[in-house]
Image (tube, rainbow, N blue to C red):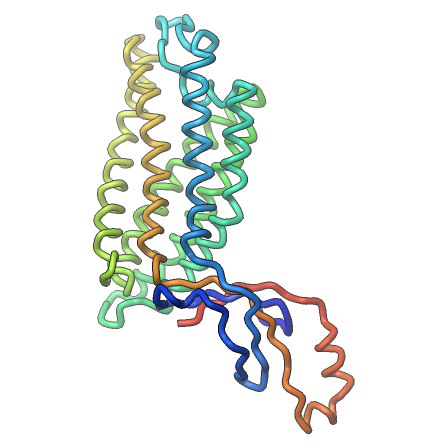
Length: 304
């Protein structure tokens, strides 16, 4: 989306010293002045640290300080000693940590998703023959990623005490959207310039390992849940709870691989774009004046 002022840009392929503001320059009849640049590592940390801290804080506080409230509860199939994640984030203090730090990272993750979607289009390997499959994966990357994020926010807001059935449905949809995002991301990564060094192969193999581990937790999670409630095998609920914790941290770790994808490769900058006065512009003075006074429009753009 174009506008006369207040544009934000994302540049690809940068060195360690590229974080100084560029001098004003002219392009396509417009004067472009950068206000400031932001290191991609800072953007990454704002998207990675909050959910990691929120998950660790919620689970840690629950197990250390509120263990009696959520553990050793006696259900019809026997005593469960480890709480599920849903029971943990149902407690007031743990719920506050979880909601605050999960929801606060949502805008940053959306920026990362749309930036990745745009860059995957630009950086596709020209030698890859199945372009239709790549494009399909690229759109799956975007839609599954946005859905995963929205369902994570929804299950954080709608807990067990609000509506347990809806909460469980949201949790499983979130998990399957995560699987779709992981696989689509792997496909796009493998058949784009992301796969090149530095860090390209490291990121790819880490994603593959984490995605495989995440997939392996799904049958364990579902199977242990069914064994507890249908066959009344008591230890199955502990296995279910551990699988749930593991799945959360594998999900966060997978998204953490974005660090290798953007380090020394991307610059986030905010700039002002103004039209340059010309003879033709003066003849259309009114329209140019209207454009110059138009409301600033913020957008992200990939330059590479």
